[in-house]
Image (cartoon, rainbow, N blue to C red; front, side):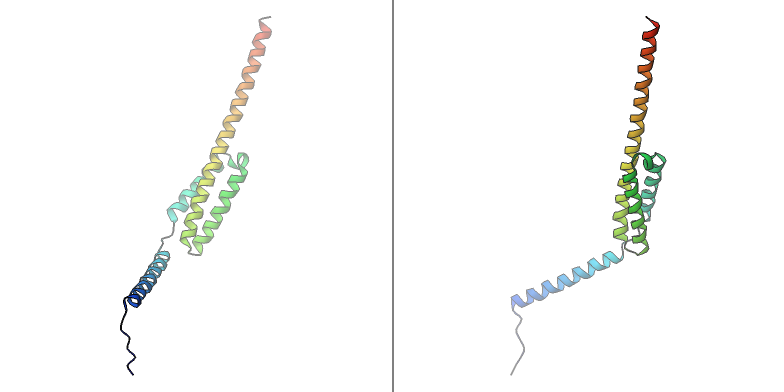
Length: 133
């Protein structure tokens, strides 16, 4: 009995597809393993958080500041665990949260200054009105 099978186009196509899928999976795994550590993004995110804190975000935008700090802590843990893709994503999110916190803090301080100027202008108008009577 002869057990050799003739390759059919369907079987050959199936083997080719399986081989291609395996090569693709191997390349994807290799790409994940060679992702460099996101040290530049980590530095940018830490700087954004420091700017936000210096702008008063802890007082004026505490939720956003806490979110940025928490994400930076998770990014540092991911970096230590060599999960660089996760570290990069978390650092980017932390940067955005820190920038939002800084913007909210600056906005709140500007609003506070504008209110103080309005109050001073009102007091000055009252004083001027009293002197002209």
